[in-house]
Length: 474
Image 1 (cartoon, one colour):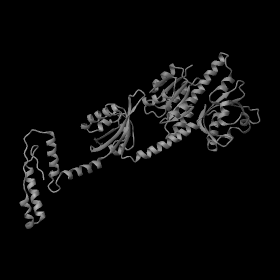
Image 2 (tube, helix red, strand yellow):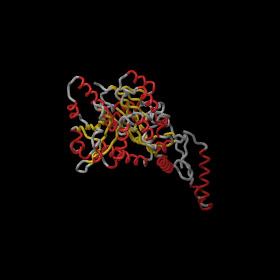
Image 3 (cartoon, helix red, strand yellow):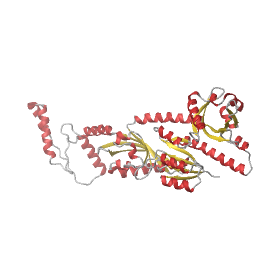
Image 4 (cartoon, one colour):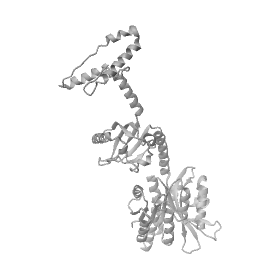
């Protein structure tokens, strides 16, 4: 009995991410309203995951059309929303969505939330099948379910109005309380004070018929005062005699997930602080001809003049286009060398910024390998070393040139002669020396600066006769 799920998402990467959360289910995908409606018409779907943040598809309009077309046998709908647009979340829930997930999705969180609904659907299908086949009883399914379940009903003739009917063993385990304790104190008494208002509002809307169901994260207080985080999904329940109305509540312990989320948020915060002070950009890219970027840090703007999103998936340009043309084959060759030996990448080269300026950068990176040893991606940082290069070039210039005439100095000449000797060049060469001692004697008569200016004039006159084969040194 495989559940059928439709994922409506225009971005291929997001569709695959959602599909990865769904496990072994029959999953259909659509990237347009027309395609989604076609699949809804042909398939008997159990769950629809609809992205309300799509640019090309009006998610709310699609939600309204689904509600009008499939009033009696509408599949469960989970919406994907933008955390900065809570109004759209509310509209989606009012149009019949049973839950929402905020983008960007955190895989473990999304999987846990979706699995709650799939578990409910699975239980419903199992329950229907078992009752039809007169097999397992409801109580057997109820008690063996790997998720907390409570069934409450409202008897209008009862004094309290609300009485607890069923609580399974998993629910008692999660909350650390027995069925008798729930009957005695009620669910509000064990709900954390900070979550009580939202719980009451959601339950009031459910009872008033304003919503078909609701889901939320909340905290329960155990008898010892400790807190357990749970994700609950609540839906209406009409009993056979028609006089008693209640609801069924599925409860999943998400305490560990919340701890992981908090640790992840702290890790992301620390990473964000680190990356914000990085004199360059951090990246993750594909190992392809264009170095297709999968992640680029905010430092991209300052380093390249382009916003990070312009490089993601080569939207406006590829990272390869930023690299100065003469360095592109060299970088490719160096990456091939280090990946083959599983070494770290360390290379200096020039990029061309959005303003046409050349900048020297240092790239430090490494390959990311899968279980088969194949290169899955590249990760690293690209640092701005233009200032360092400028200082290095200035030092090199001063080290190799005479400060007064600007000609290559004797140290440079000595190194050049040594290099020629080591290469054993057979070309005929000559070294002509010009003795300026007589000029120096003029210092006594005309002063030091006069002599230096004269030497500079002589050097300027001789430079005019220099070419590739004739060089002048001082």
